[in-house]
Image 1 (spheres, rainbow, N blue to C red):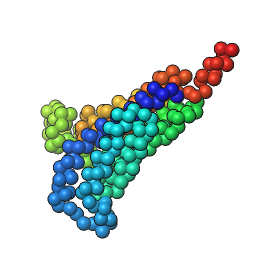
Image 2 (tube, one colour):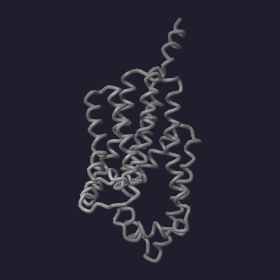
Image 3 (cartoon, rainbow, N blue to C red):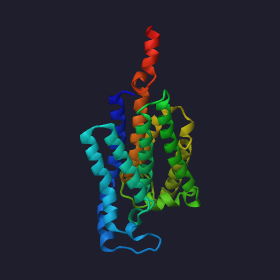
Length: 273
């Protein structure tokens, strides 16, 4: 892989993580202030994973390492930033203030795949692009598989969950539009139909690892973006890092083979002779 392609790949992965991380700021800042003023004491968490200062450090650290990475613009610096995201995201998943938050679940896996890409791209095999593309498909497929498994409940089958959370009072443009177009007594039926559609779409997208790489990544990017646009902008912190991974993988699919295949120059030389 040539140096420019490798740098662009790592930079793209890092930007996806930074945007997703930054999107969480509007929630984290007030949550941090509340957590600092009214700390909780739960025996399950050790003291350092209850500390508000640790919470803040884990959030800021990968951002600072990323800034250094952009200033240095070297593969090693970007690799260090991806490593910082992986470590801090894993610890955020254990901290009481951010325990099991979906934003850090996706950030952790994207950073981990990014670290693999950093190492593997130093001496890439001829199928490096295919491997990265499949890892992207696998992560996205598992993301939707987890979503569909978690929704296999009576509340989703009859639509009451989405009715109570979104259709009844949520002041988001899609649900305001539905309330304007549908009679109040029909709103529960609309929520039920919408819930069935969500189940069907997520079940289909869980099969993405079995699709051809390019169409799978294109569909994944639009599906993840649709979740944010039509449901809840706060979901951007969960999906943008994954969208960044998919976009980078799709871009590499379109890069000429000699830019990513370590064996390509040798093949070209042999063909020329």
